[in-house]
Length: 117
Image (cartoon, rainbow, N blue to C red; front, top):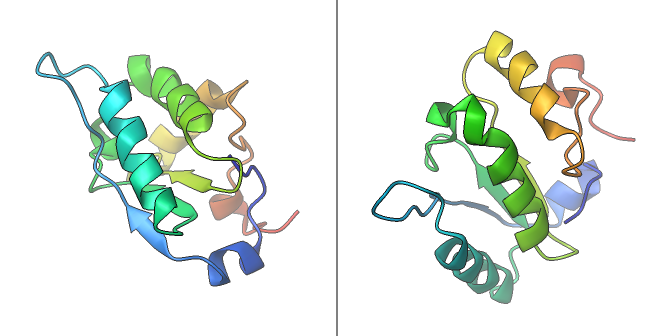
């Protein structure tokens, strides 16, 4: 998974907004999500957006770290994953504490305007 957001990366890539696949018990379906990611990457798309379509806005804080860890491990080395923190800035600030060790940036670049490193 790419961990640096650069303007060139977004300009050169198509984006895909993915739904998050779950099992009947509503737990994350790792196999189906991995299959979807590989299918999308196979088509040349290298930016995956997880937001409202994926119901990321409604993910419990207790499972946010698990899902970020899964996405970081499942995405290919040249794929940029952009997870939504939800519609509320306060919730984003709480959720960013979950990003440690997953490879996702924790410095809220969207809030600071600092998109390039």
